[in-house]
Image (cartoon, rainbow, N blue to C red; front, side, top):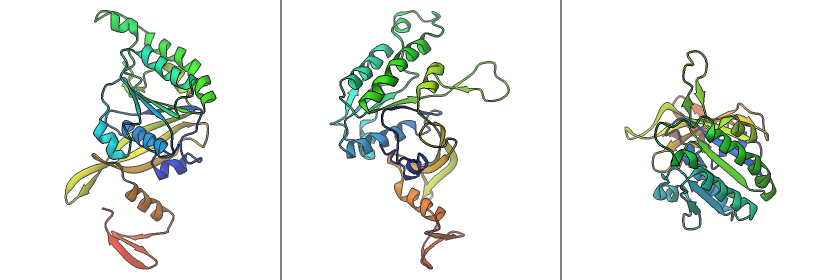
Length: 265
C-alpha cells in the first residue's frame, strides 16, 4: 500500500508498505506521524481497501483526515476504553479478514485495564510491555494470514538517568521492535515552508530505521503543509531535480534549457 509519499515509496523498494506485516511509525510530538498514517489510509481506500482507525488517543481530526483524502464515512473508527479492548478489536478484524489496514493511534495511549482500575501512584512496572508483547505474538501471525497491514503510531520517551548517548525510547517494550517489519522515524526539521512570507508548513524527514523489504537507514524528505498534509507537488519537483530531469541553477529552475520558475515555493 502506497505511503502517499512518492519518495518514501521509492525508498521502500516495493512501492509502499508491505502487506501481511506490522509497521511502526514513531517520532516526537507533532512530527507528522498521524499525517503520514492518514495518507496511507487514503491510498488504501483509493485502491478499494477497507480501513479501521483505532483512536486510543481520542484525537482524530475528521476534517483534517478528509482534507488529506480519507473517506471517513467508509472508515471504521473505534475509541476503545482500554488497551486490551483496542488490541482485541484489531485482532478480531484481522481474524475475520474484514480489513486491509488497521491503524492504532497510539501505543503510548493503550492503557491496560489494571492501570485504569487502579489508583494514581500505584506501581505497574512492565504491565504495558507485557500486554503489547502478548498481543504482538498473535498479531504477527494473523496479520500475515489476512494479508493486511497493521500500523502502530508511537511516541518517544526519554530514558531517566541517561546522560550520554541516545536517551530516546519508544513505549511498548522490545517486542514491538522485534515484531515490526518496517519502522519509520518521523522528525520535523527546522526548515519552514513559506508562502508570501507566511509559514505554511515544515520540511519533514522520515528515516527507515528497520526494514525487512529494503535496505534500512535511508532518509526521505518532504514538505508537510499545515492543514493539507504532504505536498506532492514539491516532492515531485525535488525528485525531478535529483534525477536531473529539471535543472536548478541558484534560485532558478529550468526544463529543456527553458526557465520555468524562480524559487522552490
